[in-house]
Length: 69
Image 1: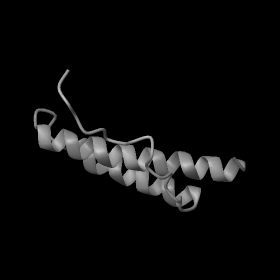
Image 2: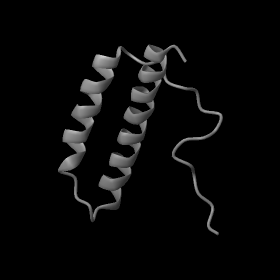
Image 3: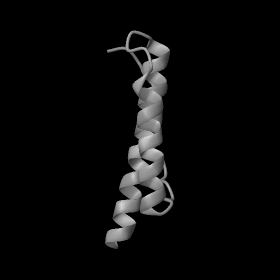
Image 4: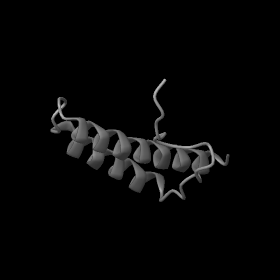
């Protein structure tokens, strides 16, 4: 198997979320921005994967905070 760099490591810190409303707005913004990227472009898909991963982590952190977890 070829070596690789993970998108997110187990030692990476959990993001400090904004409010849930802000996190939802940011997630929608990233979804809009990445929707038009070229699916055949490795660079575009890498950008989308990183952006969506970061936003999903922020959104989940905000949901956890709101739920008191």
